[in-house]
Length: 123
Image (cartoon, rainbow, N blue to C red; front, side, top):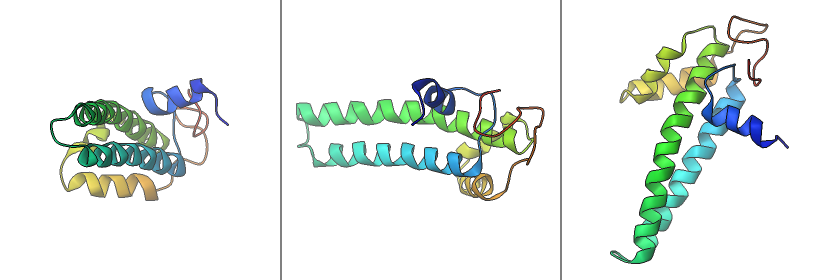
C-alpha cells in the first residue's frame, strides 16, 4: 500500500511522470468520489442541513479534483515527453474527451526522459 507522500505526489504535485494505468485509475477514483457526493446531495431533502452539507462536500471535491486532474494530466504528458501546458486541453469541451482518451491509450517513453527516470515516481 502506498504511503501518504506517494498519494500526495500523485494527486497534487506536478513533477515526475505517471503511467497510463495510474492516470486512468486515479481519474476514475476522483470521478467516483464526485458521483457519490452528488448522489448523496440528490437524496437529501431540499433545503435541509444534510442537503447543504452534501452540496458543500461536492463543491470541495470538485475544486480538489480540478487541481488533481491538472496534476495528473501534467505528469501523464511528462511521461509522453510533452510539456505539461497541454493539460489545459482537459478543460476544453469535446476536446477534453479526446485528450483523456489519448492520455489513457498512448504509451509513455519506455526509458528515462527529461521529466524523470521512470513513470509513477516523483522526479
